Image 1 (cartoon, rainbow, N blue to C red):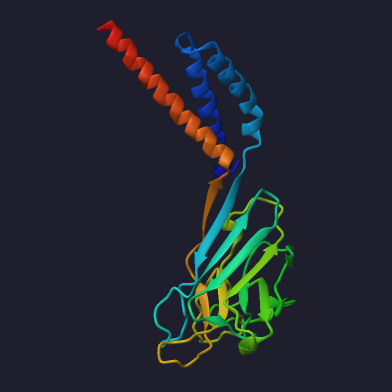
Image 2 (tube, helix red, strand yellow):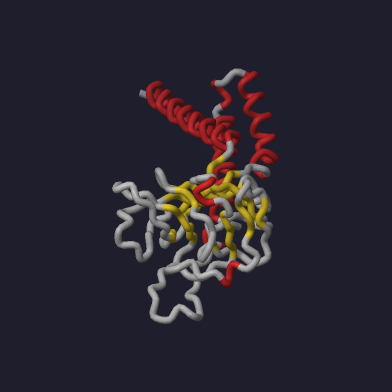
Length: 255
């Protein structure tokens, strides 16, 4: 079981336990409230067993590789989401202000390394899957297993790319791999990255250069609970507060 699923299960168990504690104090609750809480506790088994959380992976295009005149990053972000285990991964690549994707030539417009055998779909106009990304040396970030080409260039400046990728499992940062050094790299600089983009960078002097940028830091994954899970947590906190209130009441009467 993944850590994300463990967290959701913990919340569900904690919530049902709080309901039990509240029912233990039923002597000072109305019969209607007791009946309602009992019904709620009965149905949480099914609700919790089906509780899901959207998984979100994020990374930053933090490296400009060997470009010494490209300023400091970040140069864009990569966000990958999965609504439920087994659903397609939804990629959103957003470049920095005034930067756009470069027309694909030597490099792919966007590259990454993921588990083999998956399928890219939903590409916008002017983008296409690279059928042989392993042969592309996205210098200085090397070779990746998936690549996307941009076929328009300055005729249709684009700074955002969205698409989907199949994934039969649950989104995990470990499914993304670092790029590999090309066999013919020779003495050239190599900077391993998880994602790479070929961009038209616009420095303050108004000129335009065409560097590749990369995400050299490992991506981070987080789970965003559904509204129903947040509701469980709120009710759980309410239950804890009620038990504390009841305990103080007992202490007051005892005094």
